[in-house]
Image (tube, rainbow, N blue to C red):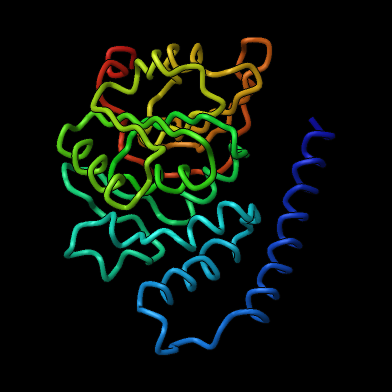
Length: 250
């Protein structure tokens, strides 16, 4: 346990150092702010990435690039678009939310994606997390239990050109067996336990990240090793509860 704690501490310190270097690079290379060629959302995204994501230790250049490029305001209702780049979640209807930008970045970084990965997302919501995944990896399969959200997200993702995202309405507990196995699974709603079908659909060595718990939730990273999930608890979080068949097991 002492060795593991030391390794985690060194990894954290390395992230801080790399983040500092990225911030210096951004400060050196960034164009002057408020230029005529910049729209408000371009400036807002740059500020979001610099102050909310990189400053908090996110170092994965693919994650940073994706979140710099994606028009987050397109994924929230019109009445909230002026707040789309703020440091907080926002309602998207049907009692659901779009996650805080930092949490999206952290979850994406922790599953350590590469371009050839096939990823399963449980809880499409507005489609923003799926868009981030789509820029980084080969194929994204996303399941949303609320029909209206699934339809809206699927349409929006296609309109914005994220053609490697496949969205369906269904119960995330069951996963997407026809498209399995997956190199990574990201769950953006909170179950008390990891559904067994998702474990089965994860490749050996695959990564799964999920906010586990009820009123108190812990963002938890799992790595499948010899058929079993090895756990690493990250930070306390707050997500909407997972609905559907999972409720029969809680």
